Image 1 (tube, one colour):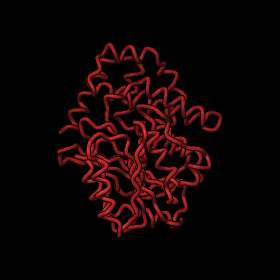
Image 2 (cartoon, one colour):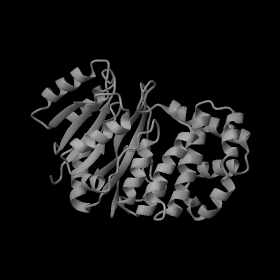
Image 3 (cartoon, one colour):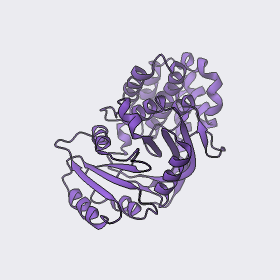
Length: 330
């Protein structure tokens, strides 16, 4: 089906947190989309809320509601949604989050113009219950206008999360691209493998997705962060991409395993001794040397952090993480 988007939303006990998500769907200025809810064995009234929503919007756009027979987690739940989709493009949305009112319209227009297998757009971060929002660029070229980006740079430098990305469904099906059955980082595997099988990737410089960080969210639970889980996810990517994108995999390892997860571990209260132990099993010097040419794509903070990690200045790393956490919380 031409120019039609399937929005896949995994839900689990979302009764009290899905209202903004549903309102943002009703507010879309373009209705060339369907919504596929997959309930992962909720024990609250989520299904009742979804059925009410389906009846309420039946004259605007199609809604399907499915329920897993067992609690499977977000990865397999999204995979099931992809198999049910009728749209030519897939967009993933979490029940905590919501879309700008012009998201579908801009994506439909972009799809018609650029003919790319993947479209990347920007994301706003919003703290639950707070008013503070800031934009997270899905691509490191922060000062560039909308443009095509290379497959290599998409693998190395785009955000790992599934948010702010739309993919051609036929490409996903043809290459058997699915979410890994992991407790954490399943979207890292999906996005990077999907990019590797694209012919064209387009960066749409618009912030259209609102990522809401709340406590007690399965989808956004940072307590599940660990270096081990990141390495498992990285190995899954390596299985699919090794031999084709070896250099890009080296950069990805530094960005997603070393930087992203260890700094987040500090945010979550990991001790200096715990981080030292994790750094001892990683030869950072050997990893950083081959990717010097990509250092320009890392932020000043990231470069400083990696320099300190390289020489095991863990106390300074802890202080730097505390400073960044304080700045972000203001």
